[in-house]
Structure formats: structure tokens, C-alpha cells
Image (tube, rainbow, N blue to C red):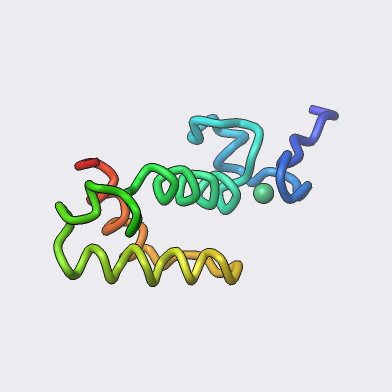
Length: 92
Ligand SMILES: [Zn+2]
């Protein structure tokens, strides 16, 4: 194959996972796909201004606030944080 697939976000060549078709999106690498998913989930989860915020536990409120700070500083989530975010997102 002469074409090398490039991630549309970071412009790095896509890894073998993408070439094997294991990713839902073929256009972004694993890191960028994860980052997009995190951004989407954070956008969908309630914040302090939403009525639904009161339906979250104190832990979840603190978790969302700290993860949003983390992402705002350009940091990525740990595997554990990603799973917790998936769990909250599944309920909202
Ligand atoms: Zn990328």
C-alpha cells in the first residue's frame, strides 16, 4: 500500500490499530479519538449551571470539576478517569 493514513487532528501516521480497522473512526489516531470522546462526554455532562448537576453525587461533581480543569490544561485522562467519565456520561 502506498497511501499512509494520517491522523486528521495531530497529523501523525495512524497506528496499526487503525489499519486493522479496530477503531470506529479511521481518520484520527487512538489518542485523538480518545481526546474527542472525552471532550464530547464533558460537553454532555452537566455543570454547575445545569439543573441536572444536583442529581450527581458529591464525588461525581468533584470528579467532573477536576477532569474539566485537567482537560483545560491540555492533559489527558488516566484509564481509570476515562472509565468513571464513561459511567457518568452513560447516565446523563
Ligand atoms: Zn492524532
